[in-house]
Length: 324
Ligand code: BTN
Image (cartoon, rainbow, N blue to C red):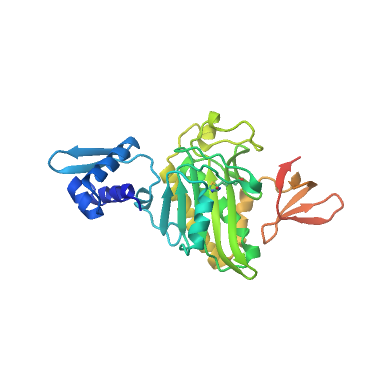
């Protein structure tokens, strides 16, 4: 935790009580001028901190911050969010989570960034990640599964995101196989899972989740392949990011525990209720090939089942799907 995060936590622990600069500097083992500087920076970020000449400081209000201390307040889960790692700015939360996991980071560790300088999308694409408006997060899991089962976890994150959009934004999010979440047919969120494994064992999976919450139209680059949007554009209402993040992590936690207990079947069942292309004709592009067929649901691994014109049933493992 940075000094700034520790100061926020101290304020939260004290509630309505004031705490002096001297006491903060003693507890945190930093100089009083460092405390003063951090309080200034917190104010710039929208924290309302009252200063009382003889009693010290008191936190009146925090902005819609994603700082660990704020996220953890009033938050209880079994696994997800045991630990939060926060970056004001980083290349990619997936890259950071991968490093943390490689160094032994605990299952359930959540990495969050306000802004990503090289946010990663699927198939080598970029994920546009401006500061302060959206949620960019990566969660470390260590499930006792075989590497070939790891793609199942994508469905788990998709269901969690759709549930959070429904609960916090009262909007009907739908899923697009395999990695996208849509509102009114436009993409609001993308998932990028990365894994470290050997032949029979998963070391860890990083669930990367990017959700466009409050991004405005002008913030999207014109060259996006798939029509992109944000929850605020679609619903006309701003989203409280902290509430959204807490709701998302709660759903992820509940779904992950269900997955460990009962396998992927109940999750795929819920995912299919959010999927509009069952029974529809689609084309699927993958690298340089394209196939067409009628969607006949998913198999137990989450592969898309397509009935081809010649009657054969094709299992599709990856690709971009479009209705035709
Ligand atoms: C896609 O739809 O192409 C997947 C996008 C995934 C974006 C998220 S944002 C948080 C995490 N960190 C990354 O660099 N990417 C994922």
